[in-house]
Length: 147
Image 1 (tube, rainbow, N blue to C red):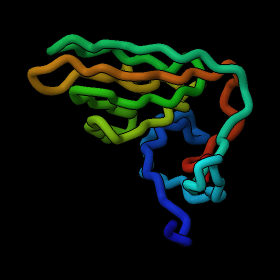
Image 2 (spheres, helix red, strand yellow):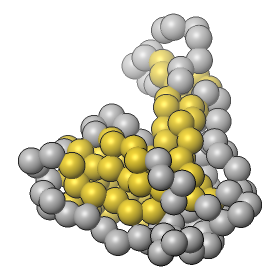
Image 3 (tube, rainbow, N blue to C red):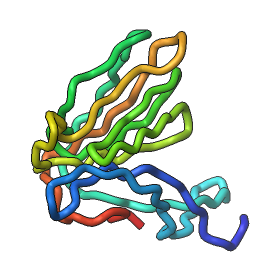
């Protein structure tokens, strides 16, 4: 096994102290090596210990949301298709399979009719998203809280 720690990139949609939603490219780097019964080794990192719900959402072709906040912190992982997220600061990020977003934009303050983010299905196929939503509310107002 490679002895260097892995790096897993993700987008963090978060709320700054002024109530503006923003998106920051982050990386999880704090992993520990673990072994399995058959001798294979891999890396693992536990990020939250809160109760969570897991569900799948399908965004049809051409779907666009209104401005909204994530109801609670959630990992959003595209399984197929592509989707886009626009934050209040105007940044628009497109993601597809293998890319990850942590939606953490609670407690934003409305500006020019915008609050939180808006999302859209991109391309000619539905976007299938796996969502892991946590019961706990956000505890910080800074980007990249998962290392």
